[in-house]
Image (cartoon, rainbow, N blue to C red):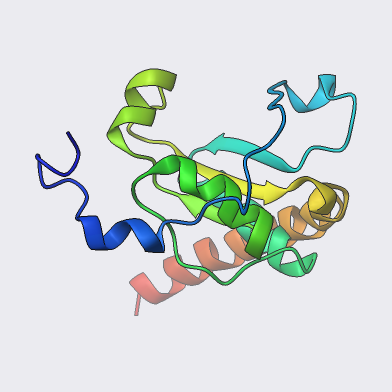
Length: 145
């Protein structure tokens, strides 16, 4: 159906990230309820929160430098496992099935990088707050010139 609609071209399929082999099992749970270190952690976020996660992942050495992904959303999971933190804009199927809002996107990171990203978020959050205050004052100053 996706080929027939022109949504995906056959030549695109080999470029879609995938796992080298299928997993034996897949377990989904809220991160606070995970019993093991997850392979990937999926965040649904508004762009400002995604910005903070991306900045923290970069600070923590868990970034990928890979541009944001479009469709299909599912390719962000193996890509994060292979490369590090991935931003996915979502695809229509995922948005319908999950109820992801038009004002949200995904940030996917390797589970083993989560503690370092959480730690980096402290610095990034504080820095962004100070930079926001600076930029607001500077904008005000520049608008009166």
